[in-house]
Amino acid sequence: MKDLIEPRIPKGFRDFLPEKEAQRLAIVARLGEVFRLFGYAPIDTPVLEFAEVLLGKGGGETDKEVYRFLDHGGRDVAMRFDLTVPFARFMAAHISELPLPFRRWHAAKVWRGENTQRGRYREFMQIDFDVVGTDSPSADVEILLLMRESIQRLGTTDFRVHYAHRGLFNAFLAARGLQSRSVDLLRIIDKRRKVGEDKAREMLADVAGPENAADIVSFTTVEATTELTLRKMTEAVGAENEGAQRLRHISGCLEELGVSPSFVLDPSITRGLDYYTGVVFETFLIGLPDIGSVCSGGRYNDLASLYTKQSLPGVGASIGIDRLMAAMEELGLLAAGTSAPSVLVLCLEESLLGAYHTLAQSLRSAGVAAEVYPEKKKLALQFGYAEKRGIPLAIVRGEDEQEAGLVGLKDLRSRQSYDRLTPAQAIEKARALLR
View (cartoon, rainbow, N blue to C red):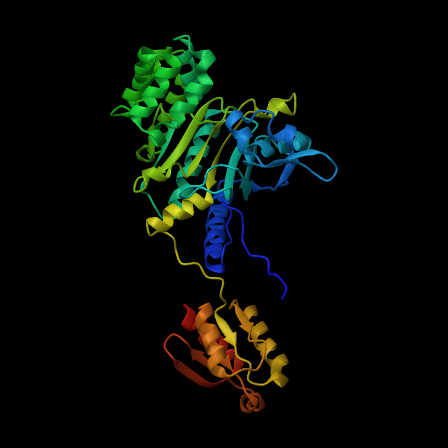
């Protein structure tokens, strides 16, 4: 007997059965409508990029997580680990074809060889949205508003978007002579929620000394109000600091728009990736703080300089769809997904296949999803198939109905039958039952 290959997949990778994939696609569609309302255009980029393109400025930890290999032609290539770096390459390659500022959104899979945990996998889907070609605070505010609108559109207001400024924190470190250790310190602060306050303070002390560690913890603590937090940050770096001025501008806009309760000025938000240069932000679900940020990003004014001499300042954010789905499911916010049609046209006689497909086409033309059972089997088996798929209605047409030009419609939920209907009447009845 031939040995069978075990149908397995690598750790951190998953299959999506129809219900889950339908849920994921529904989230993407809902968010896509939000992006359209804000004027964002969809794009796509290749899964594979040249390694030098992806890793030119990704950061040491990121490099270790990238799936990198030599292709059949001996070229050094890598699978994208996020959608931001490929977007910077995309902008440099197509700058003459695109209007500036350029707004894009992109839903696609990315790959990172990191440790798996709740809501975190090695293959996962992200949705990114960015504005490139302007360093205006208006773009920063727009991304923050889009983050807020996106999460609300998915059915919850129980979240907060935390924001800060990477440059302001760097200025704070420089004033203490810690600029050369900024990368290590930024990454410790970025892990603060994950490792806890005590461990973070210990790690900071190892890098910067106990006194500086205490100052860093104090500086990165959220005060009772946005104004108090901003005043503390400004006093530490000076009112003339560009980051302090930018944060004051942004917080003022959010206040004027009446949306400030959704936002928290949080100096501990630094983001671990090296390419962020200005505002940075993360989004936390209040009911599930331990799952981490479900929508993060920031300003990256220098990233495209790796690929072009033209200045392309940008700001954007990324939603981790898989982590967000895990959180929504835990909070009871994930609507049931279905890939099933609304009507199953039963097969009573194989000689009537043309008539069955005509009925299905008429249903589809009326906006009702339908499928035809492909072969003549016992009705109990066909009804069982419909029940397993979650199909609510069935159309019955045998030889007698065919001769009379009529059909039967059965509601499989209530078991009620509607006999001797014309096809047009059956379609209208089906639409009424599905409302």
